[in-house]
Image (tube, rainbow, N blue to C red):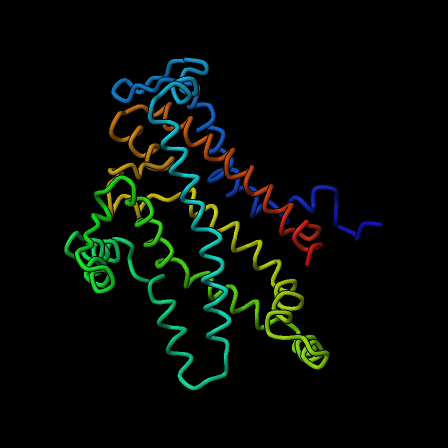
Length: 292
């Protein structure tokens, strides 16, 4: 029985402060972008013309579309690498040793550095006569790799920069998750003779499953939205063009806003598909959880 003064509309008053900003700043731009993907937009005249699926057909017929999709999917390789590096760092810095706070700050420092500043610095690292080639020449004398100019390695160099830049953020998430792992379970497993790897696999990782799901979702979205790293390091050259770089180029260089909207819709569908797969693997009833 409802309390006096409450009505059927009362619950909507509580969710209204969320629904109104969501509808204005998320739902409406999403629907407007979907509508724009079926249009030709003329900036000077501020007019639109219905073109059906012409923008999507152009994406399927263009010579560069497969390369752009391939680069975007290749960038997803940073997701498992990011999670392994972040988890390893979290396991390392959670040790109760003197000075460990310094290393936590050191590993997190790349996250707070502006990507434009970090990108300029790493351009010198990746330069033909830069630090990285100098270190490699100590192992293989005479090696000279054009990290940002060679079309075969430029994308991987950008992925390495992204890994360095963002691993500290996910390290903090895993570190917070490790603090919630029941110590009693770890002690009981150790008393039963479980080694470090067994405690990690059968106790720590199952307890971290919500954090793993969150981290993989965030890093997947970040990988699909790779833009600033590529813009600062290569500018989209050397076969490093991704979907979001294509959105930027189509809108602001080609003035083809309908094509940019169509690419954005495809990105959204790709995000939803990969997120659904991740929920099946790492969700509360995920396959990965039952296999542990």
